[in-house]
Image (cartoon, rainbow, N blue to C red; front, side):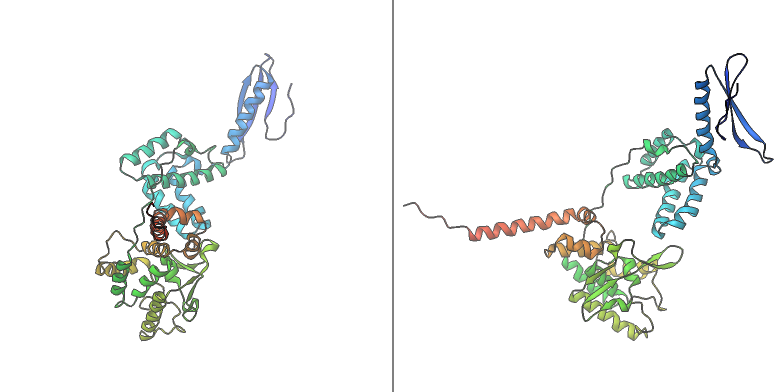
Length: 384
């Protein structure tokens, strides 16, 4: 006797031999004809359970188009249709590079629906054997996890096999900032170049490269000695002005005399070039008055000046930001103030990045305290 069930749940009937049979429509062909699967069982409850499992498989694969494709095929579409549309430009750039370098060459040929945890463990083992760093492998797992979690939401796969992977422990690059004398040598090498003042400002404010490239004269107040950070320049396929990623990125940065002098120097050079602020609002423009490109700046400005100052090639432009934090810590500035100055959203980011510099500052403070206490200690009196 047939039992009436809701649409889509399938039908359950008892055969003349006493066994139970269930039928479920799982798909339709191009002509609209239903394709059904049949299950059998000795009891009605057994068949109902089997139909339930079939429905779960059907619903998982109901929208499946990409799941029949390779991992590389799915990741390419995910990057183009999801990350590029909804993510920040920098995120898109990082994800695309990670997929291209660490994922697709190794597991891209595997069918998405066939990807399993054992294959991913082997993938990570291969990356390690080939000399990829823990940070690279950590990044590869992170990006693949995000991609496969989205595939689960799209019902392309039932679950993400990334759950079986143990993420490698991250190794943080130790920050090696410039010493004050090295700063002076670098600043001296900056004077002759039309854009050398940008390097001075980076070291004395901690502004990021994109923030410096986006800086306009209307955000600079030399009389008050402040710079207002409102925008950052992002370079992907083209140049795009964007607001900082977090609210902490929008900030007012106080300028010391060295930074003020660097901006006055740049203003003088701009006027000599015919780039009056009213006509060319960009503080550090290219030779046509437009925004700078990072690769061009590095090649024609940063690298030659760094070499002329005798600074090691391992010292990258972003380390000027760390130099500013180091100078502030050495001057006794509170870490919370440094967090706001650098535009970090979380205090933990500042503390973790500069923990070893903070330890150095604490050691110096302890030594000063010990010297002070030694001076104020009562003199020993001779026993009578």
